[in-house]
Length: 185
Image (cartoon, rainbow, N blue to C red):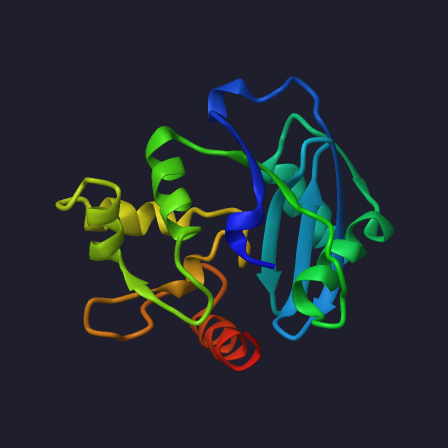
């Protein structure tokens, strides 16, 4: 599924609802444990961990969405994990995202969505793409705050030198994701 096929609801951080209903689940993938959380609007969090216990997952989601009424429902999120990380899925359902972001983050993350699978770009190129050529460092900060791993493909951003650079979910995982995409797509 191409990232550009996503439907995204952008929400300013200040517009957090008093008590959103949020469900989440943890799923094993080729890239470690995948925490997927979603609201009625769509996926609001997709993060990768080496190992994540059910207690840690609940605490992590609650810390990220402190006003939300959260519930562990892995049966409601497993289809998303399978669609993303198993190539056997046929005719995948369209995915919707519910993303809290500043205007600047939204610009950066929308630019990330334009990077094709198997390709990479640099922080500087992203800064130029959003019309802020002197903001490469700010772009890097926005890339690092992306709450939706893989779908908003921050793993496709490398340093100007071609080195991988950092990755919120681990440099080794970034390398694995890039290799997997190059091999499978």
